[in-house]
Length: 440
Length: 119
Image 1: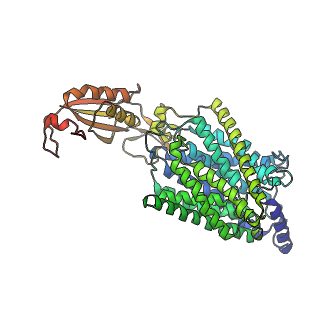
Image 2: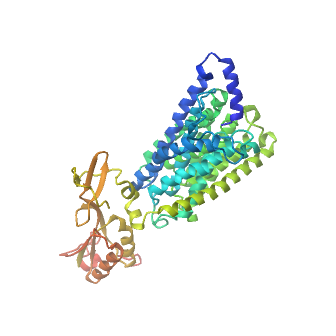
Image 3: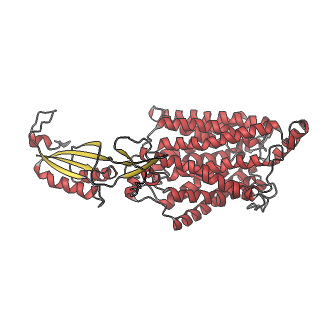
């Protein structure tokens, strides 16, 4: 989402292929961005499977619905208002209403601007969905929907403006912070919101007393695989062109998670001789998170180093997190927060002028590392404050938590009136006229 | 000796187990069962199909105890399994004719007395 560079690329492209399409669209760019948008959208259902497999059977539908709900509520909030708050000129800290309700958004440009609303919208959706991993198993569904709608407008759109807003009117971008595809905006932001949610809601009733085991590890692997697939659009599409930068981001998205997985599985085997499936899936996600801010700025070997190094903080934190008494249920902070922080800082180390970035620490520019650190700290502080305010506000309107007994019975039955794997015996058809009152 | 059979809500199983262990009741069998008692039906909807779930998931505990343990066992279950809502379940106390511990061939009282590690 390096708009400055993209505009240049787009101009060149328009020049070379001026015969290509009506409205000045570059067909190559537009085609890749159409595909990328669909790829990133798929990441949210993929996340639903990744998270869904990790929870207990009685909460799997609720867990998956927390992601699916974002596909509905956040999409509309983003298209009608969030996009404008993020990409309207405004001031360095927030956009304006010039693009609200998709007014002044047209089909002009190398890539039609309307498509940008959708492409960026898919990022807003998955950012909101990511938070759910911290809160599954005790939060009610209605306050969740209200929370993500407000969060996508008041938190996500604002931070997106800081990092990706129009040049000259975007706080962190103007500072020189690099975030190619959303390590700060999506991953650090969502992970901090998740931790804040855990502190507001408190741990699950049985946290520390019971082992919460995943109910379907093949779902976890399925979700991780589809996330990786979708991430080619997340990072590759963030080049905003079908060009060399997209190819670099794409290949780095292939290499970095592989390196993370190798390191992670070796760490596991070194610890007790066994490599776990959940560990492999987690490692792939951590590697994907870590390469996100760096994807279009580091060379392929830099990506491998970055992926390998990013394994360590997440691996050790996830191992010791339960002892902290923090019920971040599915380790959103361990995977996305620390993966995002490691990625953002390592971007400042490995970014390379030869590969389209600015010189980083390894090329003698230590300043970039400090800029990255400032951006990370700004994102953490902003997300913590705004997420806390939104959680408190929603809590005033709707009860956030399920009761103890409701929690023990599972959120699927409580909030959705469905079971993931219903048993047909004993299910009596309710006929017309007979109102199904008295739902438990 | 008695066989105590308790049908409880799955939601309270962990509390009940904790309560039993605190009361020093060891040696029990659980099974996941379905049943119908006085509880109101749970309504679920799958697209256009609305159904009343007439059978509820329950957990059945079977605990063989010597006579002196009957009352503590019952009290432990009551303390942990009662929510006050319809559907909390039942406890049945049944007579037991004979108990044999397979490992040693011990019978009756000796067979239902838990083995302690240091004995």
